[in-house]
Length: 165
Image (cartoon, rainbow, N blue to C red; front, side):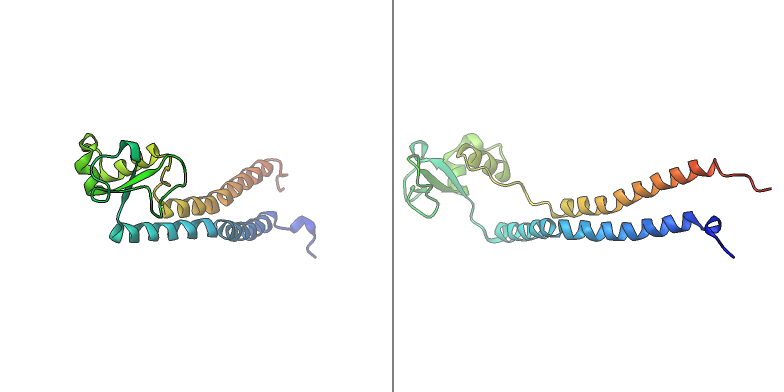
């Protein structure tokens, strides 16, 4: 008759670890799904916008160069911020022509700088694979650390086992 002395703790704890790991992975997936999906949607929208989008650059109207209505659009428009300090909007080509001091900047760097100067910083570039990688890393690394910790404890406790005669 088998009793508790014959119980295989290693196998039992391994099964508990496997079940806990599966539940943890499902929890991480459920918890991070919305963030990862939103980042993939934002990335898709950014790529679609880059294909067809017209980038407008805001400049304080008192600093505007060129002719209103031709080189830039005045502060009246859907981009109006309803503040006392209006923003005039330039197309990229017109801005490059009228503001040669920015010629050394790439389009992305120029957009970041001009929007920051206008107190309208642009969100960072979407990084959906980084978000997904973080979620996968958490789902794998945490159970692995728990497994290694349990294995180390089992190894240490095995040193106290009585030698069989």
